[in-house]
Length: 77
Image 1 (cartoon, helix red, strand yellow):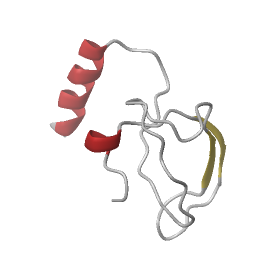
Image 2 (cartoon, one colour):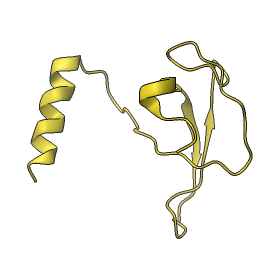
Image 3 (cartoon, helix red, strand yellow):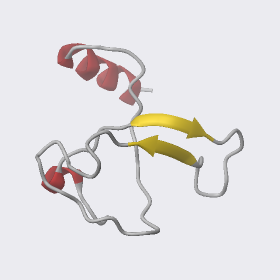
Image 4 (cartoon, one colour):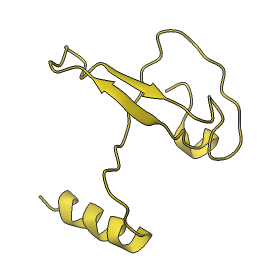
């Protein structure tokens, strides 16, 4: 992984497009980054063509305790 989250922080973005059909490695998507490549820890990342990412998509507002219980519940399955 080029930019580990525990060292560099997270990028926040808005999902603009998701392909209807997945390819071998997942879904092609386009994300707009309002803070460009500045992370939650205020580090500026260098753009490198061809990088892939893993993303979590948040669809509703929840507090930290609700998210923790959701993670515990889904990991038991």
